[in-house]
Amino acid sequence: MSRVAIVGSCITRDLWRFRGASVTGRAPSALPGLLYVSRTSLPSLFATPVAGFRAAARPPGGLRPQPHRALVADLAKTALADLVAFAPTHLIFDFIDERFDLLALGGTLVTHSWELETSGYRRQAAFAGAREVPRLSAACERLWLEAAGELAALVRATPLGEARLILHSARWAERRRTPDGREAAVSGVEVLPGRTADIAQHNALLARYEAAFTELMPPMRRVEAPAQRLADETHAWGLSPFHYVPDYYAEIWRQLDGAGLHPAMATA
Image 1: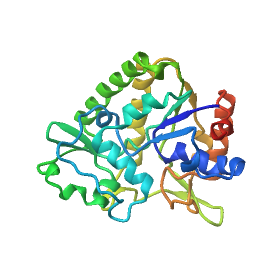
Image 2 (image 1 turned 30 degrees about the horizontal axis):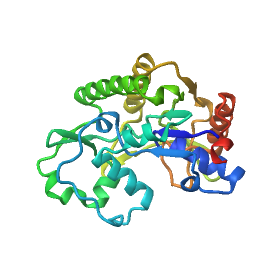
Image 3 (image 1 turned 60 degrees about the vertical axis):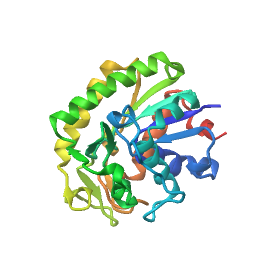
Image 4 (image 1 turned 60 degrees about the horizontal axis):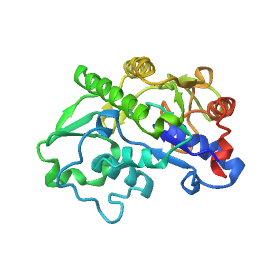
């Protein structure tokens, strides 16, 4: 049975939700052969736990259980140990969640995600004096490249090196499909409420990330669907430049099957 680990975002996880569900009838959270690491950044993955952080017994701020688990993993720095212990047969990376700024605090780094803001955790004393590291800054890019090198070394030194490595190459969509089937431009994108983002700048950053990552890592299979990269106004999670039309997920699913993953096998 395939054991698939995703270090990435909802665009890869949703392959199992939108395509796999039609095969298995089960939600991604119910699939024992799937590990999903999200709402993090490579520099945050390799940072030290937030000293003094206390996780709530129940998801705060109206968060769902899975996003809360991802947030706690980012703050407590448990994701890498979980990933190695999972011993995946296939390891898929996508960098769409690499859009959030970082926070530097107490000698560590965390991801400044929507979930962190919503949770209320930033009111804890552990977050006093947190300093923003903007995603598009040279400092953040330098931190990311250093962490990418650390990840490459980790893969080579652990059972992760035995996994089939796959890079799901994605970009922010510049066009959207309306409910009546027309196309229009994507505009007014916000990473966090009130914080607009430039699609071209983030896509250029993703291209640099992917190029550097490919150079550092062992050989990886690349899957991508630029012709189907169109935002969907009727998407289950709402309009976003990385919530794509159904044809996108179908094409990536097909390529994963061609790469030997046979995604439905991960649900056995």
